[in-house]
Image (cartoon, rainbow, N blue to C red):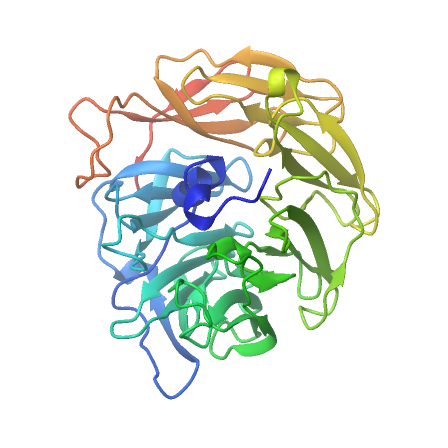
Length: 436
């Protein structure tokens, strides 16, 4: 399977998640400093004015524990306008912390999604891709909170975001991977500059230092956004940091002969140097995310494969590590569980179909999967999030059509439901939720 182009990725599952999971831009916060790379300000979320209700429709939920978590509401479908919410009572009441808007590619037929990373109950990062009038490039507005959304530090980096979130591991230490030095070498792309660069901050975004940069050369003779860059600084890269020193870059890139290959790199010095991890990736695979670690030693990396299951259906190569990512072993799963909720090294839960509400679950280290169906009156399940093998949440709706209207396209009679399970997904109950 060849790696999908930037526009194509928005038509399959990864873009659905990215578009609904990630968000940003707070109008009026921060300022652009034309004399340098960054600008910086701090805003108090409580001073943005009250949100009388949850605006729009809930599109993502990320719970940290049984009480505390984050959610995303899409204010207007078809635009980059969102709200970031937080709960401390398991989802019954939500507090609005940011209103955000992405402006990159506005008016071009599609919106570049905003990106976010929920590191913990207190630390979260949101990144807004912004257009800059009169220039071929763009900029990244980055928000970080270290106090659960009460205050947000806001900075602007004069580089266009790639398709990965900026990452902070606390309120001060963060990384941003973007493309800069416009115009780029390829006049066919307004998205990629001359270089793809990694920036790092240790003061919450007050200053950003470029710690690595590689040419954003195209690996194909024709324009394809995801073919730009030299690994691991590639347009397809996904980034995650576990702490102030250890981080990962992963992705799928092209060769000159139009074939694709997967790759994984690690840093142990905060991003200054990167080392490739030797993994026997399947030919034609697709790496959509970085590894997920459950502790310092144990982690999992799912890789999508096309046509490995029965009758040519998609499958997954599931790589696991027990030594902190130094070595990995792979197991073939004859179904697509790339986006499963990997809860620990034994348990995972995968929503197989949003409309039929079919799911797969495993409790023996992913060796055997059982199938089931969520019994609910809602027409669709759009998101599932587990914090333990037994406790999880889901978003559901009964929409029959989507319209780009205020309120997230919600019409009279439409309902966005928040469900919870206490028995590993066997039964679900609806939570009555509201704006705190």
